[in-house]
Amino acid sequence: MEDNDKLIEEFSNLWKMFLSFSNQHRTMEEFPRIERLNTMEISIIRIVYDRDDIILKEICNMLDIPKSTLTSAIDRLERLNYVNRTISKRDRRSYGLQLTDEGKEVKNEHIAFERKLYGYVLNALDTNDEREEFLKLFRKIVNNI
Image 1 (cartoon, helix red, strand yellow):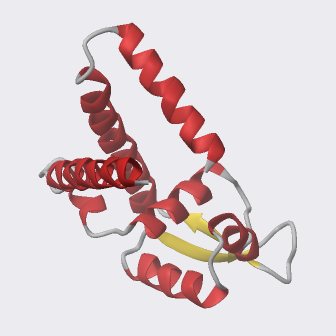
Image 2: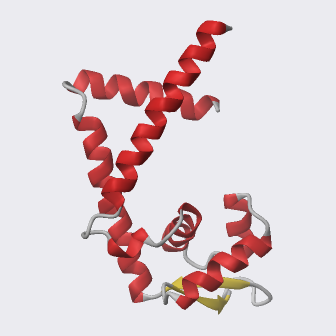
């Protein structure tokens, strides 16, 4: 068990270093819109962009959050002029969300940020074989959590 504790501690330290690196690059001048958003708000924007006419209940289910939490996040995104609430065409008893033009810009900015950050990660490895092995191991982690 002691060996496992050492591995966990090392992973924890590396993870904190990675997050610190990520945050330093997130606040760069080229990503001003996403700097003020949290992960959940970015996830909401991404879901709305990817799924036309999605209703709020489905977003709650996808993010596994209570409706009150989603409502607070949407209120903030509306104040920032990133989303608008709409009546769902699919279920007129439910509300959906629509991205504003500014919200679409946020989504595009976040994609650019991710590409840059993930590029740093993959380019830290020397060969395509190492990159493929990293992705294989990361996929295994994601599938088994």
